Length: 277
Image (cartoon, rainbow, N blue to C red):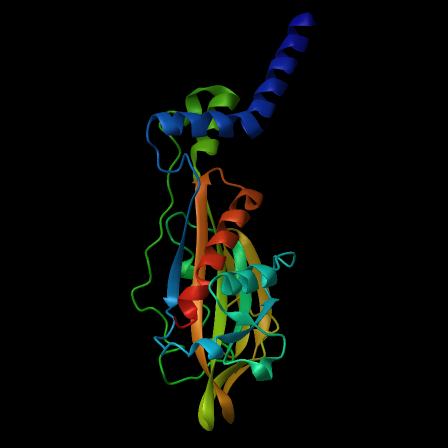
């Protein structure tokens, strides 16, 4: 009886160690062996790059910035980060969109786990045109050479060490998270401009364009929804350029909570890459 009790205690300790301690041990070993996934890494990928625009006069560096979250991660709000980044680079952020030389409208369309080393491009390339952006000028063209994504196997001999060995192997596996944001950068024109723009009436804007019913799975998640998309001809004092960004972060056994601060920081940094300097 005593032997069984000791065995159960040992088993429980192994499970606890596997859930948290294994991650710490794996990352520590990774630093010693120069494993690039031992420390958090992050970056950005432009699926549709920002346009090259002429810099405005100093008194015209006014921008209106808005943010909406239409992803499954409804708790994320990057409004303040985006506005602060613009302010730090010498832009005046205005509350009235009609008083702005530029208007930057951001829509978070996806946040979740993706294949390691994919940078989220495989998902971003499925999302079709950018809603609210002008068409016919490259803003809706997807990257032709989508990045091939691949997974990484567990460490050799992972299955030979019992629960602790399995836990360390799982904790050694890199996990990557990505946020995909569509931006519409509206540039003021002294004379009204006529153009076609893409509109998206999708009930689930996380996924691609088209007419019909979407059902797709990314890293184990499934989303469904109907979409009805079209282009319309309009005239406006603001010409809308489309931009699509994927910001990613990865590390051994990285959690969603660990990834988000790195991704938010990356998104804040690129605001000034979109606004003309």
